[in-house]
Each structure stands twice: as C-alpha cells, then as structure tokens.
Length: 178
Image (cartoon, rainbow, N blue to C red):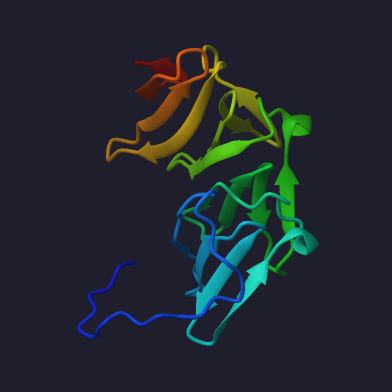
C-alpha cells in the first residue's frame, strides 16, 4: 500500500544500521509494520515503535537478501535459506536440506497458484509440498528478482555464472523461456 503524503518526509532514527549490501526491500505486513534489511537481520517500523529481528529469532546471520509478503500476509525472507515469520515472532528456515539448489537465496515470491518460488545463487526452485524442486535448466545462474505478471506468468531476472550476463526469463509450465 502506498499513500500520498502532503507533509514533508520525516526522518526516523533506526535501532540498527540499514544495509546497502543486503538489498533495499521495503515490505508492509498485515499488522502495518514496514520491514527492511540490516547487515545482521531485519528492522521493522510501526506507528507504535520499531524493533530488530536477527539471529536470536532464527534469521540468517548475514542478514536477508530479499523480503516478500504473500497474499496470506506471511512475511518471507531470503538469505541463508528461505525464512518464514511465524505468528509468535519466531522464524522457520528451509535450506538445501529441504531441496533448495543453493543456500544463498536472492529472491522469494508466492505465486497466485499458491506455490512458493525461491531464486537462489545456483538455480530457481519451487515448493512441492514440504520440499523444493529445482527447475530443469535453471542451474548455473543466480536468480536475483522474481515477479508475476497480470496473466500469472512468473518472470525472473538472472545473472549467468559463467559469463556474468544478465537475462530476463519467463517461466511457463515450470519451464524456462528466454
């Protein structure tokens, strides 16, 4: 949700330094908290205050690379695995042990069909029940960004590991289309 502001922007002191390295996501959860990355975790703001979530809560030690809020209002963070915020402030994590092609997750997206996608440092994966499946032909590329168009097609911004070339690919019927 974006609202028009008639008043000038207000500076807010942060309880932890923001991270330029880990990305620049801003997402709003159903409780009205705005989340962003720090070098060691996540920072949230609300009219009632702010707070930091980090390693004690189960977040990646290196901070989060991506943030997403799905249609159910669930907050997801990509970093060292895919992290899901539980209702009590704790986080769960899914890693290569659950089938992700790489530990480092650059992007996360919940599609309209309910499936969760993760763009990793070595492939694109989608949930299959409680595990992940890597899309054929997606290895050897980093999946930096994921978005769904108005027709429900998933798009991915990638960087090929061998040549460092950037590319935009479309995912159709779980196949990559350049």
